[in-house]
Image (cartoon, rainbow, N blue to C red; front, side, top):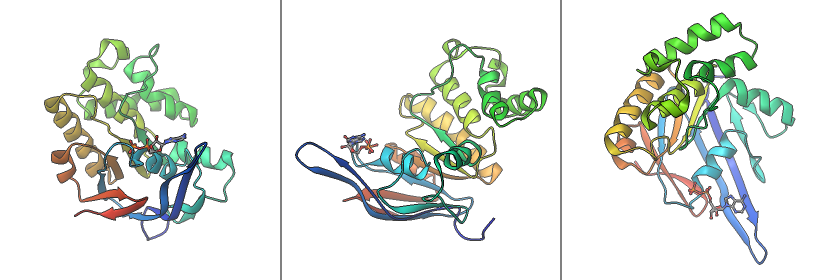
Length: 228
Ligand code: ADP
């Protein structure tokens, strides 16, 4: 473990080639996420928030620049090494929960731990603790279709942190929820991040929620700039 920022983007470029032009989404974008820091990413649709989160989360490779996680430069790593880092050190929450429909809430949260090789009993205990923490423990045996939208997202958040990642990346995690539910789910997410000392970058359109985080950044002309 290094003492510097938990996550760094150094001069990251990401371009999409269209038929008649090149779309520049990230243009030498740089950013540092401190340990235990919670940062809001607030930018209009199409600005490149998902591209940024996918690149930071090693789901996409940048065209130039690098992503440095806990002092480790990830650009030169193989796909297998990047997959292992994604599985163990990065938690992802999407706007849509992406829970596996044929499994219970508990099994969904156990899954990443089982893939990592944890014993079922240990994985099950941790999954139940996380569901309890997210105040959805009483729904552990239910399948996603039997849960409300807010409950589904709380299970998805529990799953994202099941392997105690270094960084949590969330792409509009409350974007599909009504304002009251969004606030409730966000409160649980915030408590979990703060309590576990996780570092998080959360894309949101909700300014009220963004104001509750440590810092706000935006994307402008492919650069990441601090708003406040
Ligand atoms: P946001 O999350 O802020 O809405 P995105 O990162 O999803 O923005 O997209 C940024 C821009 O890049 C959009 O104009 C989008 O159409 C474009 N884009 C995203 N993914 C691709 C792709 N795979 N191929 C071409 N263009 C893409």
